[in-house]
Figure 1 (cartoon, rainbow, N blue to C red):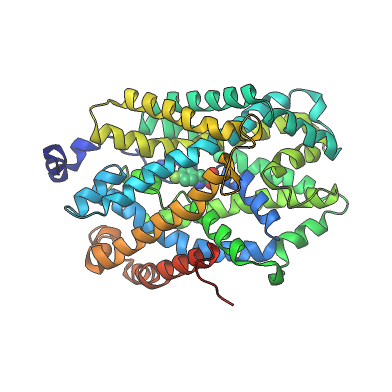
Figure 2: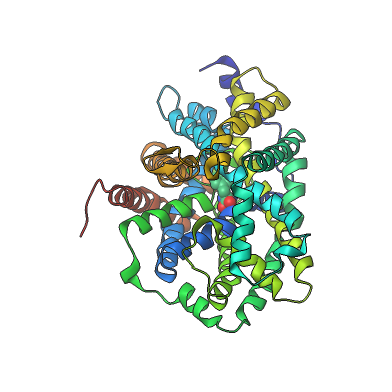
Length: 464
Ligand code: PFF
């Protein structure tokens, strides 16, 4: 290990001068990472494509039994290591290969950003589109065509992605507390409120109850091994875990921060936003006769119809896409931060240079996803476009494997005494019973579940 790093472990503050300034700031920044396109775009479309309520129940189980404990472990590793994903592992477990978990996280950040920036680009484009009245229609063919026009235009797809990356880059350069806290703090409650308004309109549409039944009345015969794997992947993706984002944010937490309590609030709030998005979208899907399994375009073709059928719809639509863009930015900040923190700690680059390098590299890799619906539509690997492949590999392989290894590290390598000391803030929090439960779930339940689901989902093991 290099000298700077071992010196830093004596005085952690040297490497990480940045801290989230307040408890609320911690909660909001972490929530800012979790809440994003995963809630508004991915959760509804995957729930729709995988049969609704039964998928939702599996997703909930994955969130409680796998997502929450791994989030706690990951933040703990970050706060202990007080560094980026790779360096934290090197400090806590010197002369081992555990740092590779952090390295896979840095890779995952690229893979996710490659397509996430494109979806964020669609959201940006829809802000502009929603100023034109053409989108204000309940005619499905018109809204589908509008989406098709956007994604099949290669230059437009690239430009919106570059705009997204430029915006994120600028915020990152402004620094951790100023940039991230200030942006996320104010906007999430407004987004939640707007989703409630949309949900009420959606629920009062004629025929809306079929959408509620789809979302909340389970039919387990629809559940496949593949769908279970997708639910697990979604849980990881949703909570930003398994790739070092929560680890990196944990490294900015104060020593007095109650990690399990904060994580519980984040998981709960994140779930609430996803459910609100579901209630906003599915009643409308059924009321207007859309296909719930429409896939990645679901949000963009259904949401305009809801707005078209409400008073001041156009104003609300602009507001909706603006707030969704902010939510996406909060999530992307944490993804880029994983790479930037790594580069700042382990290379000679300063923060600004590291951000520039990261953003440019992401634009390069991301272009393959941006062009997946146009110039590169026929370029497929394993039968998937680059957009789908990057999504598949990150959610279904990199994040679950990363999370699995973090759970194993925290419980089998790091061990109970360290775990307890770190998460009770050296005994100042009276939470031993809770910690014991989380520890045992992490030790015995989460890794086995992840392994089993992955092996069956990837068809390596055949159950039943
Ligand atoms: N959790 C974010 C969302 O649901 O949109 C996406 C995400 C952010 C995934 C950060 C992974 C990550 F590290």
